[in-house]
Length: 110
Ligand SMILES: [Zn+2]
Image (cartoon, rainbow, N blue to C red):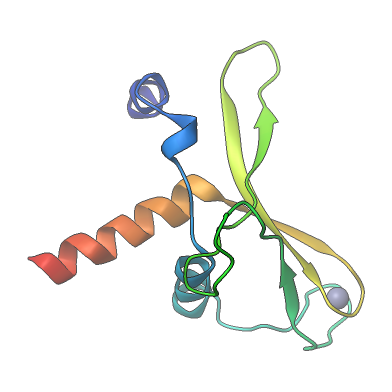
C-alpha cells in the first residue's frame, strides 16, 4: 500500500471530481447487470449529483462522500447511488472510477 500513501500526499481534494457522464461510462463498462441485488428489481438507480455550478448532463459532477479511516488522517472518497425501488445504497470508490477514466483517456491518446 505504499503507492496509496504517496498518492494521498499529493492529493488535492478541490481538484478531484467525477462527472456524471464519466460515471455512466464506468458503470456501462464494469457492471454486468442493473438489477438490484437486494430486491431483485431493475427499476434504475439514483446517482447522487449536484456539485457542479453548471448542471448540464455531461458536466454535472458526482457528489463525493468522505469516509475517514480510524486512527489516521487518511480517508476514502466514494460516490453513492440508490435503488429506485428499495433504496439500497451502493458506494463505489471514487479513486477507482477516476483511475479507470484516466486509463481510458491514456489508451485513446496512445
Ligand atoms: Zn432494490
